[in-house]
Every structure is written in structure tokens, then in C-alpha cells.
Image (cartoon, rainbow, N blue to C red; front, side, top):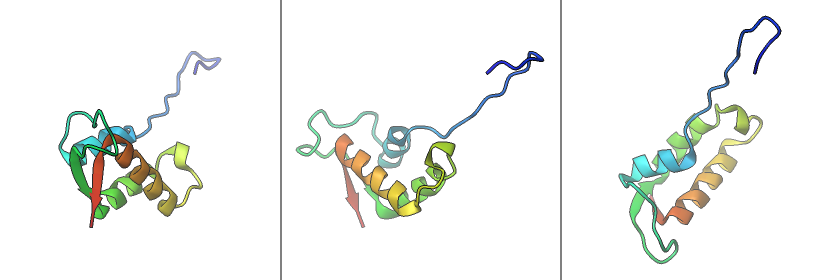
Length: 85
């Protein structure tokens, strides 16, 4: 955003949930039929590690790590990625 002295400030955020989940599962795109076709798997450990990174993002300020994990699990299911232990 422009300032009066012509300087700028940028806010860098972490990559999207889909980027992290696809990278962890080793896939290029999600399922065309989520809930029916499974295109990859990620472990709960992957979810936890991604959640730790995402919790540092300003958009997740004040959100518990458990809630971030639940969000990631929901995103994974919508991509057709199975969560394994």
C-alpha cells in the first residue's frame, strides 16, 4: 500500500493449503470426484507440520493449532486426499 513518502509495504503470507497438501501427497491436482476417488495420502504428521507453518500466517492469528489442523483435514478431503495415521 502506498505511503506518503512513496515507500511501499508488502505482507508476505504462506502458500495456500492446496499447495502444501498437493506437495505432501505428491500430486499435481486434486480428484475430479472428491469423496469417491482418492488421489493421494498424507499422514497426520504432515497435517501437523503444515498447520505449524500456516499458524504463523497473519490470517490465522488467534486460531488454535487444532483448528488449523481441522481446516487442513477438510481441505484434504475436498481434494480427494486420504489422511492416514
